[in-house]
Every structure is written in structure tokens, then in C-alpha cells.
Amino acid sequence: MLKRFFSAMSGVALLVTVSAGAFAEARIEQAWLRAVPPVSPSMAGYFVLVNDTDQPLVLTGANADFAGMTMLHDTGTDGEGRRSMSHLKDVTIPAGESLAFAPGGRHLMLMKMKSVPEAGETPKVCLAFQNHADLCGAFQVRHNEP
Amino acid sequence: MLIAGAALLLAACSEPARELPVNTRLGGDFTLTDYNGERFSLSSLNGEVVILFFGYTHCPDICPAVLARVSQVYRNLKEQGEADQVRPVFVTFDPERDTAQHLREYLPWFKADILGLTGELSAIEKVAEQYGVVFIKEDGGNGEVDFTHSDYIYLLDQQGRVRKVYPADFNIDEVVADVKTLL
Ligand SMILES: [Cu+2]
Image (cartoon, rainbow over all chains, first blue to last red):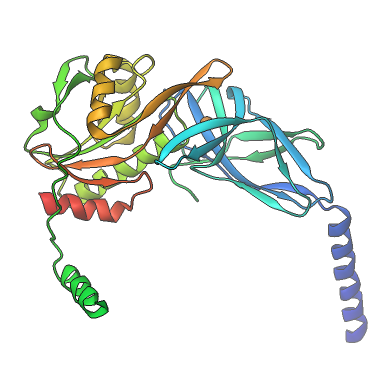
């Protein structure tokens, strides 16, 4: 009886593993927005994009209904400690890898704000791809890096 | 040599209130416009320790992070009852968009009594030069203006002299401790 139960269980476990493999997916993790004053003209978003699919993913942009314009940006630092932002046309995440957008580097730049979400809110932001359906996530607005 | 170095290190450790050297190459008084639209001279803050930093409010990645960290320094000092003679001062290098009024609306949100300064671009350029700050206006694409800029933070003593310069990712506790050595 017990033995049959266990073999049934391992069957279930096997099934789960297989289905996870079959539905290998891309997902957004640790998504957040830097809290800024309500009069701010822009906001930065950060996240980790996990590409568990078997294709490279080409991230091309994002959209959020509270921002009139969004861009992918990279903050670079030169040899003399000067920072500048540049526009990334697209970013490729190889199959099976993940890529972080983090402060002081790649970030989602939200501009032409219709409203500025406050700390504690979790507005929806969608990432757009050249070769994948939009991925949407709840981006937590917070004062500090998680 | 190694032993001497270690001894030096030990000496430094056992002396918690080590005096910060005066940086004679950077800094100096200047006059800009404060967020109330009044002319403001740095020297009017003599007698207070100043945390001076530069940026612009249209910058969403580094600048709000620095503002948040400087604010945290101030609030930590306040909690310890040590903030009465301390003043964070923010200088914009984007006077076109960072008007006195915009700074007056933007800065109080950080709850750190940050004084905002703007002014004529030429005056701001002069201040930047005094402090070794570089900023270059650039087209950020889609009609947005961005700046390439250095993002150091300056600790000034009661006479407005530069006593320490920090990178943007400074350690909050370190700055709190340094401020206290000047009080
Ligand atoms: Cu940006």
C-alpha cells in the first residue's frame, strides 16, 4: 500500500518535472521601481530577466500605462568617474541565461509620467520583445534596492 | 616595512576621531540662486557642516539614488541628535528644467532639509569647475536632454573647506561618522 503510494508520488513528481520542461519560460524577477518625488519627470525600473526558453530573447522596450514613453538605458562610467546614459536599441538574453537591470547600469527608463506611483505600490510594467509575447510584472516601488 | 604598516594601521584604528585633512585643491565659496529664488552664498552656511552634491532631477537612475543616500545620512544624524549643524546642499546642472520652483517641489520629499541651488548656467559651470565636477549636456534621444556627469559628494567643514570626497556609492555609516568628527 505504502509502496504503491510512493510510486504514485514519484509518478506525480516526474510529471511535474516534465511539464516544467515543456513549459520552459521567460520570466521577470526582483522587479522594482526607484521611488521618486511625485513631481519627477521620470523613473527608473530594475529587474532580472530569466530566459529559460531555448531561444535567445531580444528585449526591445517596455510599456506602462503611467508612463508616456519608455526606453532601455545603460548608465556607463568612464575612466574619470563620469556617468552617462545611453539608449539601448535592444538587449539579447541568450537561452538559459538571465540578465540583470540594476542601479548604475542597465535600467528601464520611464518618462513623460502621467502619474508617479508611490513607495509600496506595485504597478504593472510590461517588457516587449522582438520574438516573444510581452512579459508583464508587478514592479514594486521602493526607496532602496531589494 | 610590513610591521611598520601594521603598526600604522593599528594606530589609525585606535584613534577613532582621526582628523580629516583639508583638501586645498578643490572647493571655495560661490553664489547661486536657492530654491526660494533668493541669491545664496555657500559662506552663509559657515558654522554648519555641509554635504554638497550635484545632479539633476530628470536623471532617474543615479541621481535619486544619491539623493536617497545623502538623505539617509542626514536622517541617521538626526536620529542621533546630531543634525542641527548639518545641511545637505544639492546643486543642479540643469537650470533650464530645474528651476527654483521645481527644486522647491522636488527636494522636500526626501525629508532631509536639502537645500536646492540653481542659477545661471555660467555660474553653475564655475562652481562645477571649483569642485572638479564635469557635466556635459547631451541629446538623450527622443528630444530628451541628458548629462554626462561626475557624481562625487563633498563633505565641507564649518568654514566651507572640503574635508572629504566620496563616490556616489559611498558608505552611509562612513559619512555619518566623518560628519561627527567635524561637529
Ligand atoms: Cu536613463
